[in-house]
Length: 202
Image 1 (tube, helix red, strand yellow):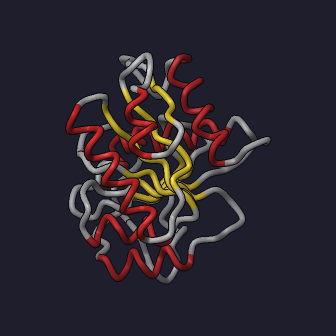
Image 2 (tube, rainbow, N blue to C red; image 1 turned 60 degrees about the horizontal axis):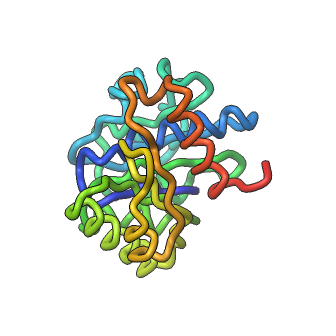
Image 3 (cartoon, one colour; image 1 turned 90 degrees about the vertical axis):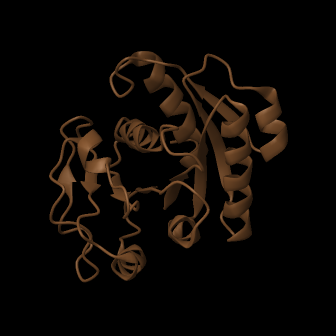
């Protein structure tokens, strides 16, 4: 189970979660992306699926829909779930397929919950002073709850800043700017690189 996290809203977490899942489809996997942002859910909008029904603690994958924007990726929208519903659903998700958790921004308990459930984390950042500071905080929060940081995805750049790798002690992957990042070949290559950190040698 992989958490895609970041301290700042608008950094590209949701797009990165879908793009990374799309890269796993290319490896003949059937990933499930779960919207863990209960306060501001938007995964369903990017993925082109209905908002409801959402996370159900009793049958967590029953409400999943195949994405119309990233075929082969199943999406579990947040719906009207609360924190307890989400926590129970995360515990019940199958381990037979890749699970990608689209995390909320910030450093609250809501942001820490999916990080604790995950086996690894990809931090999404922007190349700005504030974006780098947020990435450092998110990486520290992930490690504090025992979740290793696999890589840092730096969005809308041709090259990732070296200071970010130094500050987070993690490899960085630049994700170039694109008008349609879930369709562009240059971003697909970056998402494939991120997938190498998640599922190497596959």
